[in-house]
Length: 88
Image: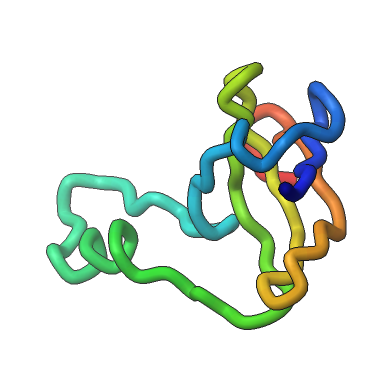
């Protein structure tokens, strides 16, 4: 079992968390977004090997936060709460 650091609740079992996607995957806005752009936003992921910045949700407290981790070693580098509407 791996422990993930929730910035609100502290270290918790990975089973309490839900992956939310790549950090920085900005939702396209406006009514004139092409099908290709919308499809890319919904389905294409970086899936990079090594350091990654991701959005996670702690299902117990319901808070979303950014977690930086290594996708090869699974080592968590840091986790941080979002500041208002801006991503930290």
